Image (cartoon, rainbow, N blue to C red; front, side, top):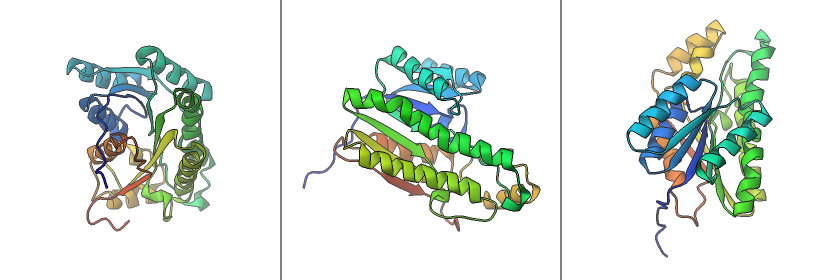
Length: 249
């Protein structure tokens, strides 16, 4: 049996939620690997900083403002990437929010936001890139989920539901694409990021401080994404689950 050979071909990689955390770390790692990165997020000042630093270091990077909850804006983001680099080879659906709270708190606006960003945002990204990838006969969709795609914990019911949905969508895309589009679900455990900063429920916020005492660096998740992206073209790395050593969940 032959050993799979890593694919070092430079690709055009689109990354959502690229202004910080896992998205920023992924942009830096993939740019260092020689890929062309196109960054999207709402905070364009941060995107400009990251893209500028990458370009100054000799990488190929560009950015555009992006609201993943807006299907038309997501389509325009993908079109801008094609205009800039000619192809759309990989989409990293990374944008996400995590305002945890118990269901009894009734924070329906926060639930709606999680559904809009974590589920609709992923679907908008897939909808925008899939016709392009099918026409060119290849592509790769990487969806960043969470260990919450496999388990549920108190205060995280809606968040976990959104990540269960991402897991289902990813598997559905794998089955439907007939091998034309590779799919990868990357599910990190607790990771250093800004997600916990937006928890408004006092008890959930305090519990998250304890939970985050052991956390993965964002670069570790970026490494996992880079592994999937660079896999032999005949290998589809479908799911990666990673946790910090010693994590209970």
